[in-house]
Structures are given as structure tokens and as C-alpha cells.
Amino acid sequence: MAAVSETVSWRPKAGEIPTSPGVYRFKDEQGRVLYVGKAKNLRSRLSNYFQPLRSLHERTRRMVLTGASVEWTVVGSEFEALQLEYTWIKEFNPPFNVQFRDDKSYPYLAITLGEPVPRVIVTRNKNLKDARYFGPYTKVWAIRETVDLMLKAFPMRSCSDATYKRAEQTGRPCLLGDIGKCAAPCVGRISKEDHKSIAVDFASFMAGNDSRYIKEVDKRMRAASDAQDYESAARYRDQLGALQAALSKTSIVLSDEVDADLFGIAHDELAAAVQQFIVRGGRIRGVRSWVVDKELDVELPELVEIALQNAYEDAEPPREVVVPALPDDQAELEQFLSGMREKGRVSIKLAQRGEKAALALTVTQNAQNALVLYKTRRSGDFTARSQALADIQEALGMDDAPLRMECYDVSHLSGTNIVASMVVFEDGLPRKDEYRRFSIADSTDDTESIYQVITRRLAYLKEPDELLDDEGKRKKFHYKPNLLIVDGGQPQVAAARRALEESGVSGIQLVGIAKRLEEIWLPDSDYPVILPRNSDALFLFQRIRDEAHRFAITYQRQKRKADVTTALAEIPGLGPARVQVLLKHFGSVTRLRSADAAAISEVRGIGTVLAAAIVDALKAE
Image (cartoon, rainbow, N blue to C red; front, side):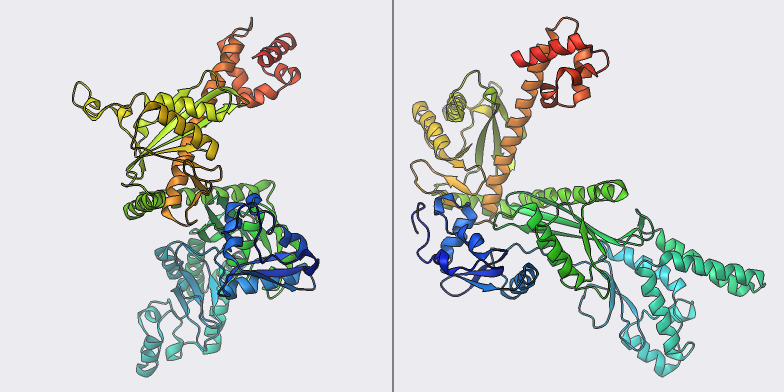
């Protein structure tokens, strides 16, 4: 491995790299494509990868170190670069590119308009020739129920090929033909051309033209009734009821003319979740979701671009696509997606106000829930937890698996209200009843804070015969961890090690987690332990570190609020009731601290003189 202060030996000369738009490919020694990217300026983009390795993000550094060469192809425009990047990602499936995949196989409603006698089916197969697809839907039973209702309004074929041929040979229709849910072209009750017209109408209705059909059927029903053709009027009445019942199965969220897809994305350092709401005719017609483990560090605009490319790989995009952040190549991506439509352009936009903004917020919340659910299910998997503990044991060279892990995090606000947290995981699961909080009166920096907290925690550890209380129960805080984790790199690990050595406690493995969770630092090590990005071991490290951070931040905020409340209570004329009104008005201690006297004086019961006193008190705190 090259030293972290150097770059790789195969770096191309800057003068050899063109400044034109293009697409580049990193390859390993066997010629496998590791990563595909595009650039407006190839020289500028590639130079970012060949900085001193020490300055690169860990995942980028690992990709560069794995590679053995880089190739590039110059294209005529940024749009051509987008097209070529998309093609190569699909062709080479590079391991360092993010590729969203459905977390399940969704059912679709398909109408096989390419067949002489089209049929409607519920299928998970997206490769039927010349078929119109609608969905995806989350539940098979829900779409089957909708199809059952729709066949009353559009009595088209839904039987298998074998059933249809049997009916043709015997001259007897199936049960659906007898009860009016199929026009029975198999026995000549309707011509194949007329039957295909019914199928086309069915597809048009599902595509969002529902209001026009309802109005048309209602008009025919009234006309038949006025003409005293009550049999036809009753048939139209049943058809109208079926249409309205089918529409009631979908949520009415926007005006009838809105055809759009709304995307929500939630992500962290290791994973990303995408939620897609498919809105046609103002109604949510389908929902899709993806979850993916991230290999390289990708921000939200780039995730949006990748998600859209994957979403429309085999589906026609609508005229409007609503996203949580605009991609950098918005114009080129719009042109790219527009080429997938039969007619009309695709517009990518943000939803800033109104009904679409409210629905976009709902989509994002669904994505956040999906990400939480993904992590919860993964951490709740006994096999995955066992594998994670075994991998940690092997990676750190421990004699036993870390069945009890303790993680520590320090939190403060500009050096004030210094607190720390201790969270406990046993068998890979949190033990919240054994969490602890520490208040640190005085400290010079985070390393000193870590030293103080670890020293205080180790003082409680006893010999095995002292672990039980008077009732014979184990004393929670006296149980020694197998693995002690601190939030930070080498300096924090060194401080924790000093506390361990001074305490005289042995048999505890110590590590630190670097801020972005990619690196595990051991004492006296010049290089970190790098765990695979998609490993359960790294996932467990991330979860315990996030839990420690959350617990510390919560305690630190409580102390800040208590300090502000105490400072405000000392101001003459400002009682507890007014203090609560102030905090409720501004919503947080941070906003109250940043407010000026004029803003504070607008609060009910707070005059200009009292507002000035509040500002002075908060500054002096």
C-alpha cells in the first residue's frame, strides 16, 4: 500500500488529460471497471482523485488504491456524457457506483395491447412485449380487487391463453363471460376489434383519463333513462358504480390534471433510501422504494440523479418529476428523460408550496421511515448480529467476541456545558437501562474530557466477587466491557488508553471511531482498521456510535435549557410563566440566544426594557 502522504504511481500527467466534457473509468489490475463517472472538465475532476492520499475521503482513497489505471472518453456535450455514463454503469456494474435496486418485486397491472385479443393481468414480469404497465402497487390483493371492479366497467379478457383456447374450441365461455365481467370474444359475442377498443379504454382510464370516462358514462346513463331504455341505463349505472368504486381505492391528493412522480430520499454515511409516489390524474397510483448501501460518499443532488436514472430504466417518465434537491446536471437529465417519452418534455423541479409540497414532505417522511426500518431490521437479525460480532473479533484480533460494548461521546457548545454519554450494547443490541450520562465541570479539550470520563467509569469496576449487590443481583455499572469505544481518532484513543493504564484495569479492548465512521483506530497504530462498507460489523459500529452521539446531544441540550432558564429566572420581573412563554415563542434555546431585543419585545408580556435585560443576561451567561 502506498504511504498516505503520496499518490498512486499510475497517476496520469495533468497535461495528458483533456479539459473537455467526458466520461472516465477506473480499472483494477485485472481490467475490471471499478467506477464510472462523468465530468464537465475531465482534467479538473480527475485531479481531485490524485491528491495526496492522506487528504482523500477514506472510501475514495480505497477505490484509488484498488485501481491500477484510469481511462477517459471525450464527448461533445454534458448531455452526451450523461448518456455514456448511464450506459457504462449498466454495462459494467462497477462496485463503487451507487445503484439503487428495488427492495422487493412489486406487482403491476398489465394490459397486453400487443396481442390480437388483449388481456389484463396482475404480474411481476416487466418484460411482456407491447404491454402497458400500471403501478407498481404495494399489495397484490389490492390490485386484484381493483381489477375485479374495473372488469364490470371494461369487460375485457383476463383469462389465461389455455382457458381462452378451450373456450374457442368448445364454444362455451368461462364464468366471467357468463356474469358479465368479460365480453367473451372467445365465442364471438364481440369482435376482436371491439374487444381491443375496450382494452384501449381500460388502459386510457388507468393512465389518468378517469374523469372523462365517468362524465361520459354518466351522460349515457341519463340519455338512456330519458329515452326510457332502462336496461341500458341500469347497465351504465352499474358501470358508473364500478368506476367510482375503483377510484375510491386510490388517494385523491392533487387536481385531476396532475401527472407527476414525487421522490423522497433519506440517507446517511452508509445507506440511502428512496421513496417514489406515482401520481396520475391527481391520484396516487403506485409506490416504489429502494434501499442501498453506499460505497462512495454521495450527496443528495447526485443521489437524485442516480435515483431518477434507475427509476426510469424500464418505465416512461411523466411530464413532471418532483425531487428533494435539484441535480447539478438538471438540464441534461431533463433532456435524457425526455428522450424516454413518446411525446412531451420532462420537467424536474422542487415542490416549494401548496399541495405538492405537502405531498413531497410525506414522500420524504416515508423515505426516512424506510431507512430507519432497514436499519432496525438489519440490527434485529440474529444471524447478522452474530456475524458482526465475529467480524469485529477477527478484525481487532480479540480473544473473544465483544458481547458487551460501551461507547463514549463528548458534547459541548463552544466549550460550555460539557457532557458525555455512555451507551451499552450487549449481544449487538442496546441496553438502555445501563446508559449513563456524565457532566464535566472543566476541561481543556475533547481528549481531556474523554480521559476524565473513562477514568470515572473505570473507577466503578470491581473484582468478580464484588459484582453482586446485597440481594445477589449484578450491579449494572460494575460490569466490565469486552470492547470500549470512543468517538474520535488517534488523539481520543490515546487519552482513553492513558485512563485505562492508570486505572490498572485489564482485559478491555480499546478502539476509536473516526468522525465519518469509516475508520476504526487501535492504540499505537499508524493505520486504521478498514471494515468493508456493506459489512454488518461496520453497521454495528455505526449504530452504537450514533446512539452515543444522540444520547450526549440530548443531555447537552437539557443542560443548556436549564442554564438559560436559571439565568432568565434571576431577571427582575421575569417569572417562570414568562420564561416558558419565551421558550415556547422561539422554539429553542439557540433561537432565543440569537434573537435581538426588538424580536424579544414582540413576545406577549415582554416590554422593551425587559427585552434588553434578557439580551444582557444571555450574553453574560
